[in-house]
Length: 102
Image (cartoon, rainbow, N blue to C red; front, side, top):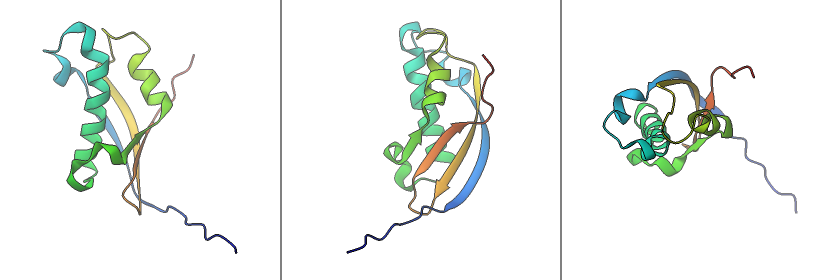
């Protein structure tokens, strides 16, 4: 039997600049990068209208995670520019809009 392959078509695609500094201002230093990851997931779930704002339906790219953590746990970036795509199943993927040059 041949298996049916489902294609995930992109329903919605947007770019956001997420202001991280606003949310981590009063967080202890040793928790800032961890909180920044949660902020990105919650921001995307809110603005892409994920059902019940479920952050489990938001997939963050490895490069976004590395960008948030590359300066350590105490000093994440103040803001980050991301490209967000939502497919027909309601799964949202977050990618970096501009890949940094090394």
